Amino acid sequence: MSATVDKEELIKAAFEAKENAYSKYSKFRASVDNASYGETMCAERTAIVKAVSDGVRSFAAIAIVTDVSVAISPCGLCRQVLREFCAADMPVLLVPANYTKQRVDGDSSGGVKEISLGDLLPYSFDT
Ligand SMILES: [Zn+2]
Image 1 (spheres, helix red, strand yellow):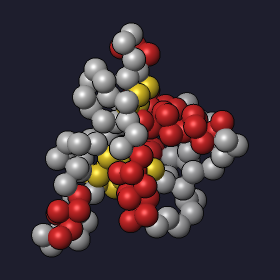
Image 2 (cartoon, rainbow, N blue to C red; image 1 turned 180 degrees about the vertical axis):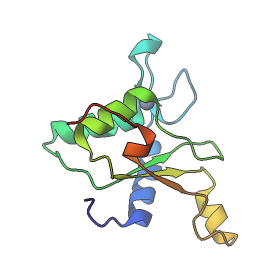
Image 3 (tube, rainbow, N blue to C red; image 1 turned 90 degrees about the horizontal axis):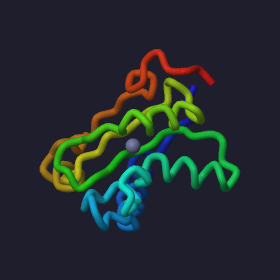
Image 4 (spheres, helix red, strand yellow; image 1 turned 45 degrees about the vertical axis):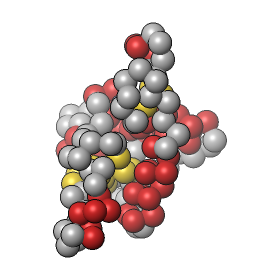
């Protein structure tokens, strides 16, 4: 069972974290790029690894933000890393870049798609 999450605060923090992306090659501000492309680390894995190395082992939700106007889901690698530390019923918020504008224009969801991690990665290795 997931804990209660302040989704607005989570989305705001995700947008703030995006400002620290290192997207020198991809220009896709949702990663830490590397000249050796295979070493590029997506933001989702970066967030989990950083938190785990700080001693955090429990997660209530994650918000995925990019500069793209439609909500984008995590890649397969990130889904499995998330599943290592997060429950299958944990909410994953897929947030479009124009989230704030959509909210102002009257879409109360802001275009956010909410899905469980288990729905993103069915039949995952159980932890
Ligand atoms: Zn990824």
